[in-house]
Length: 182
Image (cartoon, rainbow, N blue to C red):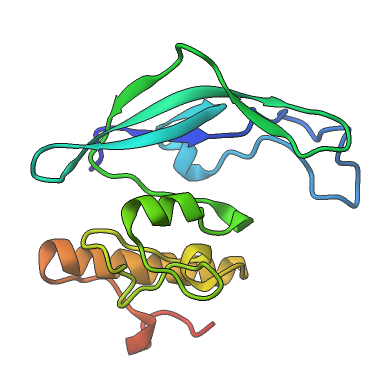
């Protein structure tokens, strides 16, 4: 039921075919398009989210982003450079963060006041953090793990969000045996 879905990626757009920089047996660096992308997703590359914008009720209304570039210096970590004058406000009422295996961004948890455990993973009860309306799952909650856990966590978190928003849910839970055990 979304009016639109926009995907931001902080990295450059990968090539359609396998990159020469990742020959077998390395994981192939190439553009991957899922069925979700094909359903109608506006994909944007080299974008960094700078700020969540809310109204006077605390409801999310937009995201402030900036275009970025990567400065590569041999022997050093890549450096993220913001492109001056490229800030943009995107209308938004729901933001989902997919950070992969980089781990939770400490700055984000500090800015939002999200409690973390000794490994810097987000603490949660029923997938909701200590901050009302902010849910977490997968790598952010468990730490780096297998994709099957990420799928399971995503399903369980979606169920908890549904319960939170609607007061009830028809979504299955592995706690009731509706999803396969992992």
